[in-house]
Every structure is written in C-alpha cells, then in structure tokens.
Length: 358
Image (tube, rainbow, N blue to C red):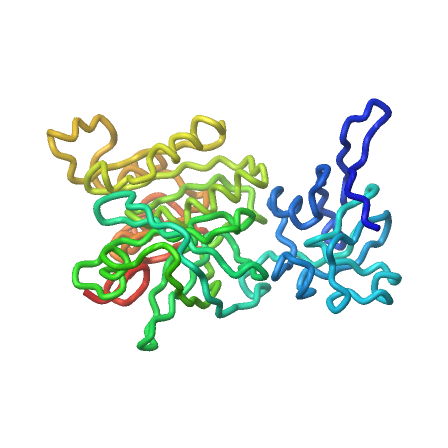
C-alpha cells in the first residue's frame, strides 16, 4: 500500500527530502506530499513528462539510491519487473528518503515532442479593448510540456493556423494562457472577441519556437515587449522566478496608450517582490488625459538611453516585426550588443503570427 502520510521528525513536523538528478548533478528539495516532477518544475528543473497522470511513461527514469512511493503509476506504464529494477514514473513518485535519480533534462526545444491536442476554453477575459486573455484546459489525462517563451498553433477548420505564445510558465500548466490581440477584419480574432465562449473546443499543435530563456548564461537580461509581445516574456519571467534565478532582469514594455500595458500591475508586482527585477513601462502616444508621468517614445530608445553598453548582456525582444528589426539594428550597432545575444520573436499580424490577415 502506498504510504501517503508524509515524513515526520520526532516532534511530528513534516520533512522534505533532497533529490539529486544525474547525470546533470542538479539538486532539488521535494516537500511533503509533492511528486518528484512537481518539485522539479516548481524549482525550474524541467524533466520530461506527458500526461502527469502515471499513464504514458514519458517521465520514466531510474532511482539510483533511496526509496520512493510509486503512487498511482499504472502497471501498463511501469510493470512490476521494471519497478524491481529501480525504474519509476516521476510524475507520481514521491520520496520516502533522500534520493539520487537518473533522468534526462529538457534544455532545448528539440527535447520536447510536438503534440496535436484538443482543449476546452476555460475562460475569456478582456484585459484591454483589443486584448483578450484566453485560458485553455486540456483533457484530464494530458499536459503540454514546453519551454518558457514558446508558442502553439491554433488549428482552424479551413486548415489554416494562428500562432499564439504561451503566457503561463511551464510549471503552471493546469491551464494554457494566450493573449489574443484583435486584428481588424481578422476572422479568427473576430470570432474570439464576438462569438467564442467558455467550454468551446479548439485544437492546437505545439509547442514551437526557439524563443526561450538561455539558462546556461549568467549575463544580465534586458527584455523588450511591444503590446501582446508581453505574453512570452511573462512566461519567461515567471519561470525565472520559480527557479530562483538571480540574474538581473529589466523588462521594458512599450505601448501607445496606458491601456496597451494591460498587465502593468502584474509586472510592477514582480519588480516589487524581487530585487533582481525592474519594470519600465514606455508609452509612445500618451495623451494629456492619460496624465502619463513615465517614459515616453519608442521602447527600444528607452533601452538605449539606460544601457549604452550592452556588451555583457542578453536581450529578449518580442513584438511587431518593425520594432524587432529596429531594436536589433540599433542595439547591436550602437550599444555593443553581441548579435549572438539578441533573441527575438516577431509577432507578424499580417502573416498569421500572433494574429491573422486583416
């Protein structure tokens, strides 16, 4: 029988266990009641997984030292003979002692399988006049593994696709969060804003993209968002917070008017709660009625003013192609940024990326 009572010291206090992952040597702490996978994701270590329900075997690995509770792992995914050899499904295995385990870690896009899945619309929230936050719920036995910053393709009935970045962090995958900008005349975004409702079913394919945090670097990070380009940067920042990343992060978010910075309070909360994070909002077309006292002009010009020498930094930029092109040209040409340290995802509204044809 599985023992779900947890581990206690002599005073009856719950204990956590230390787990070392080989061959990487990474270490994590697993709290009482947590699975090994839950603890790893919470601490920013991405182990392979699929269903997170003990059924598919994608999270399979080996226990080299220590004892575990196999939890609800199904016999078909983890036969008794494999358990005797030390194999485990880390999505449902819980430590009974300190552990050494063997598992590969997901560090690049090619490590993750691309899936086509259905999803139910869980909620729709209009965050700005032209921005809808859509949350999607996967079937009970499915999860989507992805790297912070990647995107999915919504599959339409006519065979076309619409691409949207995932705004939730990988460890927070109960719901997939998309930030949808309304495109005038666009059939899909028009449907989202006028007809789509909770419990509607959509199909998607993903994850895709090479826009994700390069975690092997220790360089300070400058992030530049334009409009809904905030979405993948939100995912990256929340992932960095989860893994207790101490690299300095400065987020610049540009819009025309205050409403374009539709999650400004959230970004401010990151800066307030974490000494290594700064948030700088920038408006290009603020009106007198806006009573704007912050930075003005083009968002990448604010970066140039604050960071005239970016030679020791990484830049992650996401927004319209014109913004990306100007930022890349100027930051590399004038601010000494290495071309190899500029990472970008361009939201091409005219060519289906983060929107659709007008």
